[in-house]
Image (cartoon, rainbow, N blue to C red; front, side):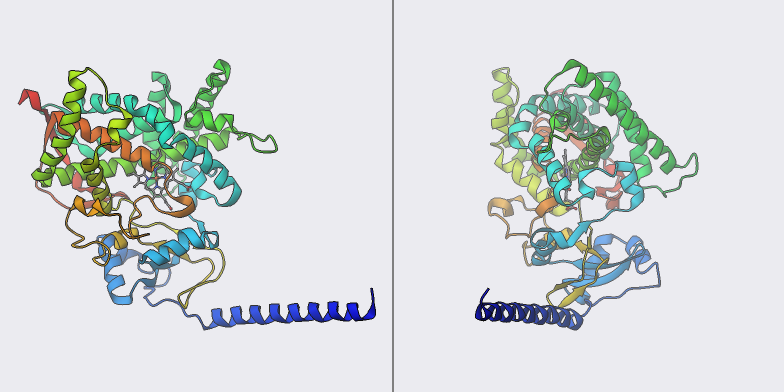
Length: 471
Ligand code: HEM
């Protein structure tokens, strides 16, 4: 190299180095200048956990938002947290800067669901699994499930009718579990289904209990049942491999997967994701459906409006002796809006958790590495800034699309719910048969919400159902 050329090379290198150092210094300076968000941290270690659990959680968050604004800090369950109650902040954490915030769950819960389930992961493993799960729940895949879901809904409703009082939430859980099984396994032998149901309900009971490994505790029982669930899934996989059947359900997609190096998923990864999907699907959908029944019951006019739409479809199918079709479920605009408004009002997933993987600055505030970050969906859904008269059930507000990132019942970004179309389909099918053929009355006068952890009407909405033709 010539002497002059070498000099230019050295000077360019030094210039680039200088710019880099200045940029880094600026970044450090701005982080040092950034301050923690306003808020209170409560008592040492327990922080404000007692305040959160001694009242309705939404009152806790709303009071804080009024006092400190859309970004505030607190200390919950042994962790410093930053709460975010604005659409822009949720977008920042869940979409544009999602790589700076990893999913975070207590280890005790992760062990029960299965550590390889997609929602505990980020990066390549997550996106690979997500494609598989999303594919098996896309509109194209679930359109074939309408008849199966319809059969489950009809049989559930028929079993509810009579003098007996049912716990609506518990019955809706059975319904959403059956739909989950149908989506994952397609047709499944009754013995496998019963065994899955029996063991899954033990896991479900232990999920919110104190995580103790002592024999006989609900948590320990749940861990043992979880092991049995893996074994049952293993047996189903074996039978499917023997039959060499190429099903397109979720299990089929997981079994047929091969990456570019020819690697396949192992049985633990498959079982963890199957249990994970069952878990993500059951209480959420059941809670939403219980709320729909409550809102409809509280507003007789709503029932009449839904009935007018659904009975027209029901009668035409009855006359031609046909079943509900996918295209009919796409033409239920009134009921669909009621579902959206229910999801807004009930905000089943009130908030979600992430953890900052580095110091992050947002709007002049520092979110330190290791702190939990919680986008507060419910606060956004209930803000008068985005939804006029937010406490009023008004499904016609969905005649116009909500502003971006103000309506996130299914989350947003890389971890947004892949089951959202399936959940809406289940609800449409259930409402179709419910309002076309049944009446129901809520039993007892107790109003209010119970959290377990999802919000559900008090006592699971005890109700009595009767078939209209028999009234
Ligand atoms: C009304 C019913 C439902 C609601 C309100 C709901 C809500 C959500 C929300 C908010 C998330 C994102 C959580 C986060 O970002 O931390 C999520 C994720 C997820 N949901 Fe749903 N969900 C529902 C039904 C379902 C159904 C029926 C399925 C499957 C059959 C399902 C499967 C999943 C899975 C697998 C994830 C994790 C996705 C990932 O991490 O990439 N959900 N759901």
